[in-house]
Length: 238
Image (cartoon, rainbow, N blue to C red; front, side):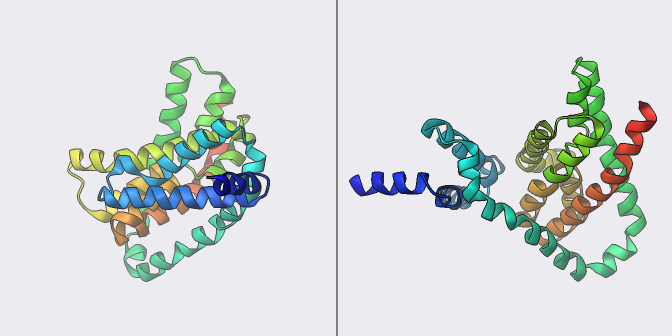
């Protein structure tokens, strides 16, 4: 026990703390997720976030101290996103044949996600800066933060909304698709990537390779369309 305490004291004072605790938490959450046969409610990203937040709160660890180590994992997000191009390349002929339909679906899906969030926020009387932070909720968090800043929102709040959107999609998508009778993995994946960006795409990858590929495509299309159209829409309605 003394050795464990000494190890904890050492790690908590170095960048190794954030890296070690993040990896250990995710590996444990993934093991539980696998043991439960990938039940959506046991999503390892969701429970890793919960456990890490509780751990930082319980130990009084400032977030910058934690992130000084976790940033090494954060850096790998870039290469991970680029790697999503490989399953798209493998299906390039099918994607090329469906290009028009997929682009239209991405446009309608992204517009529905942003417009519904803004309409609900306006209906319940949220401040305009919160509504602006809600609008890019279905775009991956780094892009959502940049868009929120441009729209007059709060980047940190936009990141929270984006992560929550991704987690809700990853947890609830299977139930919703089954209820609606949507069976094709390509359709399920594209819808999940459109609504729930990277976290949804990660969940789709775990379920079916075609679902993961189409989710990755939807993720990229939402980033492109939102970056081009949301600022233009904001200027039009202002």
